[in-house]
Image (cartoon, rainbow, N blue to C red; front, side, top):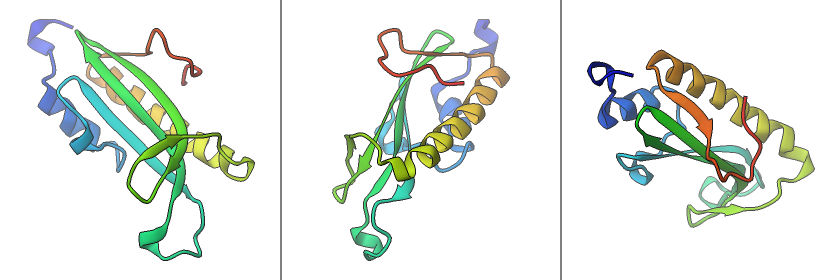
Amino acid sequence: MSDEQTITSGRLMTRFAQLGPYLRQNKSTEAVYFFDCLATCVNAKKSPENREFWGWWLLLKAEEGVLEYSYDFGMYDLKGDWTQDALPTSCTAEVKQSLDDFYIKLKGLCDEVSLVLKPESNSKTAQLG
């Protein structure tokens, strides 16, 4: 990508927000973007303010035309924190499918703005796509 085509952090943040409800701007910086998805409710019988969710989160680190990602699965708790945890069999397919669907959108955006999207070099999780 040439200097004339370099996309600014602010413009990238705007484009990421257009992907859907995944970007958490308050947890993102100019060089690291935080995405997550509350894919499946742990117990839908509880009132909305007392619900926890199974899902995923993904960190995207930007550096010189390259975006490196790392992700994990787990539970989003009542405090609003993610805890890495094995997904229950009953929701594994749905949670993983939501991550795959997001990755397709993210990859399309990266291709559009000429950014390379790749897994973090020391990532212990499988490559997406």
